[in-house]
Amino acid sequence: MLRPFYKHQRLMLNQAMPMQNPALLVDMRLGKTVVTIRTLKLRSVKKVLVIAPLDVVGVWKRELEKEGVTDVVALIGTKAKRIKMLEKKASWWLINYRGYMSIHKDMHIKFDAVVLDEAVKIKTPTASITKLLLKSFRSVPYKMILSGLLNPENDLELWCPFAFLDGSAFGCKSYWSFRNRYFEHTNYDWEPKPGTRIHIAKYLKQHAVIMTRKDADADCKKAFNIRYAYMESACKKIYDKVISGFCLPGRETANALTRRHWLLQLANG
Image (cartoon, helix red, strand yellow):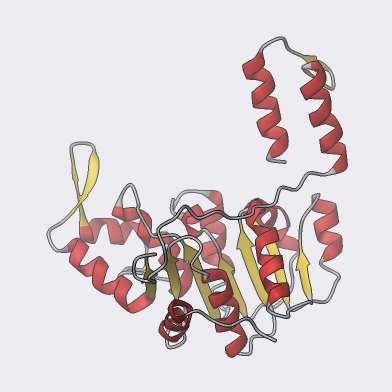
């Protein structure tokens, strides 16, 4: 039995369904994950790939289970382990951004839909992950991007996530044409030309579902979420040695900042 939808979630679903490739730009804890799952189930997609930050992969698995979806594979672990897991059969596949970069050449599954969670990960046009994702799924019928409410340092950061959806965005086929058309270079930075923000607002209204906690009539208390951390057993043993002895295999340090740097590297795989 499916969980009941809140009024604001029904509104999100009704807005997303007419869009071919919608963006859900929604405040934290308003349920954009479950709305995404329902949207794709209503479209009867057979195979879905979700690319998300590593600590959110577990959240997706839990939400899918609550929606009655059990044929889910979370591609977590070493590169060899992930590649081996590709032999499994499933409808939903979950992977983190770095994980996708490491095994994308081995993924020969034909996906009907691809979802980018925390799509601001591909805001930079010159980043390797951005280039890869912009060209990897051009023939996929359905695509969605998820994010909290956008608050970019520069409006230029909007082009790449939306170009993932449709191959172009804001009437421009490349980031560079977008920049040249709507921005001008002043004082060592790119500033919007007159009318640019009006054009961007109109585009977002047509291609995105935007909702704040106030729009949803949700209370404004602090919102908490469960995130999941994954660490291979071999990595965990090294991590424990660094904690207790300030040493990596073949390396030692007496500097607390160096140890902290090592721990951060290990925690990120």
